[in-house]
Length: 307
Image (cartoon, rainbow, N blue to C red):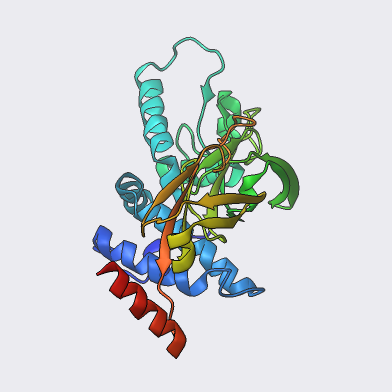
């Protein structure tokens, strides 16, 4: 398994603080974001590497495991468990038989590397041949992937085809998934060993907002420009929603910053079919510019009337 140096990918030292890691990640993520590099496969590859490095180094627990175990950091618990199992078998040599199940995260290559590294080729568990004789079963390695979607993509439930290790997987993405949310596809990870089950596939969603709305969980927020005349006299305005349009009546003498709630016009609720959050519209009154001489005279007359 090739070793990937996450510190090198982010361009920081091994003693970098959390703030330094966060700053480096944001800078690189902006530089290599697919939206800014359309069709650039190298930028796409770098973006994935940067996200993977940040996922590990920004999490103190994961970073500690990575610093200790390097490329095998995901299997830190398995390493410790295997150590204890080996010590236990030494302590109780000649005990009862039976098949044991080991719920680790190894593929075939990882398994061999691990036991060679931890116990050596001549030890009690020194290689895949000996592991098969021991009857221990090992779960396959879990895979992790990131799927980038737009906000309009996740407004509706839809299907996507992903390619994982050369295999195409058809998945359903429910409406309302959130940025950073992770789902698990059971049995689509690496192959098990010695009859053990396959690993799982973890998919993390990276959702890019391609709308004028701000999303907070199931609710949407929109700042809407309102001309002075309509704010004073009242009238109708039309708002383009993600699935159509809605017409609102503006009350006369509407003040700047007035907020209107449209119940059920927000974002779909995750796995709650037919249920939506709310939409909050805030009016921002625009002062007219480039007034003609006549318009200025009329405003002056109005000012005198209000004096």
